[in-house]
Image 1 (cartoon, helix red, strand yellow):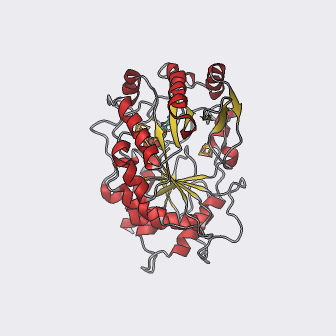
Image 2 (spheres, rainbow, N blue to C red):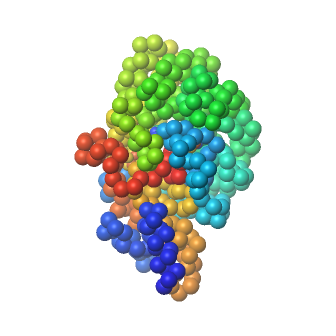
Image 3 (spheres, protein in one colour):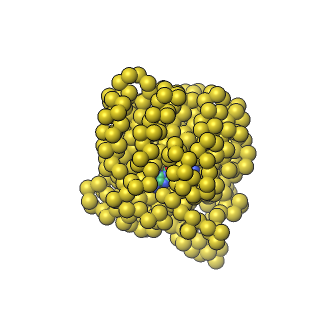
Length: 394
Ligand code: SAM
Ligand code: SF4
Ligand code: SF4
């Protein structure tokens, strides 16, 4: 009883709902009596807004060697900050078990993220396990990873050999001084560029490069980034511009520091004419535009000015095994408690029961934070305590 109380207190301190409890939103997420069979539901699993479950993002660490001001500002993530101890993290076996259940329920794409995922020891071991998973039709998953690129030159070949298919690399400037200021740990551009080259050589292409645009900090770098990547790589690298988001509660986000994607696109179009491209996949976050001269494409992720909740098919698993139905959710759902705990009769939760719990969770999902923010139904940054990007994964 006492252990239960302590557990519940710890969970609520971290904004975590136990999956088998009735949550504060009044939703009962009790595991249904009849567990789902492996192979998933007979019909597609849809949430309350008819969105399918397709994309699982797994955060493998809350640590990072960068201190990007929009994500892990130095003043907050300092020597005093307590990162999660190792025992709290899901093990590779636990992550793979969860991933397999998600594949049964319809997930076809897995992205590893963090924090900085390449800091997790022997991440290749996890990639090997995930690469061995198959869909019910016998197909491998679309397995990818987002990284700041700092360790990529060293690790690209091993990641590919382990079964990783593609990488996304974050890079906010071509100018070395500006980039060192953005990452706030004095890390040089040249090493990230070496990481991108190594990824391409290892067969991890085409590489996506993410640039978060913060007005007044790196917006003068938009054209130099386009110029560099189209001339050096053409279609082998797709540059994507991300609107600075009000995620988490520590980055001091201000609307006037957001440069809308439309303005970024107009700037690029004037120098390098663009034409719209079809989405490669339903639920894709980026709007794609091709250079009219055929030298590749750019993408725009506009979660502030053009909400794309309508077909959001993503679910996030945090480093310590909490499920988040939205990047801006105030609370996660405690899957780790089910993975590690036992039922009242002392027996472990079966795969069928875990699948049924996740199934029930997705069916009651109605999240659409960005739409509400855009319709002014919500003040930007409003809501309960929000989860940091470095914890939940981008
Ligand atoms: N450390 C890795 C990296 O930087 O690529 C992976 C984790 S990071 C949280 C994932 C992505 O989120 C990165 O592309 C990063 O630029 C983006 N990101 C972080 N904070 C953001 C914010 N406030 N607004 C928009 N994008 C953000
Ligand atoms: Fe680290 Fe990525 Fe966040 Fe930058 S964006 S601080 S690299 S987790
Ligand atoms: Fe998906 Fe939430 Fe982002 Fe909307 S705000 S696109 S529901 S993660």
